[in-house]
Amino acid sequence: MTGICHGIIEDAAVPYRVRIILIFLALCCCWQGALAQVTGQFDAAVSIRGVPDARPDRLVFDLTITRLTDQWDRWANGTFRIDNPAFSQTGGLTESLHEVVLVPGSSALPLRPYDATAMDAYAIVPRIANGRASIMILGPDSAGNAWRLLERNKPYVLGRFELRTKDGSQLIGSLDWTAPYSFYQANAFKIDHDSVTGEGSGRNVWYSNHDNIELFTRYDRGDSTGQCDSVFVQRFAGEYVGDMTVNLSFTTQCEVNTAGFFIERSLAPGGRLTGLSFEPREQLDHQNNASLRACACPTGRDYLNLLDGVEYRREYYAYRLASRELNTGTVRYHDTILVRIPSPIISNAQLLDNPFSDRTSARFNADDRLRLTAGAYDLGGRLITYLKDENGQPIINKEYAKGQSYLAVFDAESVASAGMYNLILIAVPFDETAVEEQSRVVLKAQLVR
Image: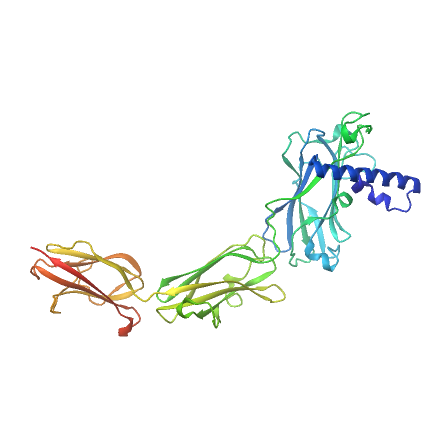
């Protein structure tokens, strides 16, 4: 009742005695609404349910109503006022810059243009007023034409709305109900018969079947709002992929008010994150790389295959992810990760058969692209033969790509007698010749006849 009547109460043109009566009725409904909140006996729930939308100049939401009790089933009308708290310090939403519109075909209500003389359906009038979005839904005159909510506890969509800027500028923030609810919100139903007496707190209340009766309403925000206030990064990761290259990626859940992202790098001795000196990576800056420009949307996206070349092996590199705000350029840092550049470029080397007769194979992984020489030596250090690859070719300075489960075969049938041999695999990075960068593996193999 207060939501319906407060405009009349504040109108000086309304006779004083009528205003006193309306104030009394409003106070009664306030008390009844407070009782409903204490006891949990709400008749209806009206919710703002945000709808994800990639366009940066608008916030999209569904306005839904749910019948919670059997006290009613015919909905009459309502007036709902919604704020964007992000604008509260600047006077709220303005008619010159903002507008709120109904998405055509989105309402479950039977709609028609408003007619002051007679209404047999509903008219929805959304507008910006007094710093907030106001959605007025005018209903039919007769209870017979009132829309029925047949199912309890099922949300029905009164309409999908777009709050947007008229000049296409970024619309930040999220939506919430204007409080106090008892003053700013109104929600009413109709009954299809006259009522002389009620029950409990409603006893001795008389309503005609054409009256609009205030609903005790709970005002909710939907769990899946799809809206956000600023940029949010869900994941930032990096992986050494070989060839002195790191592959970086990250995922956002929100990019509102964001121009784009950039990544900085620093050496991190010992894998420590203290005392670092970060430097920008020009190719990993949205100002130079279009793939890092933000969508400026509330849904976010994946950023993949961001490659960075490194200079040193056996080192940790620290990467720091940051973003710049739209318009202001303010920098915000999100996460820092470590990526290790491996030292051994051969790993997990093992003999498949040992002891063996005539032939055995060494299986190994290449942690990076490399050039490999593999030979069999006797215990005196004399080269007996070179090991062979899967194609039977001697492994002499042979290039291998980064990968797993390569085989080097020692075919000893015609070149060696029974005894112990050292199978030595020496690898160097494809782009290095320095001795200190060698990866050397010795496997002892016993040949039996």
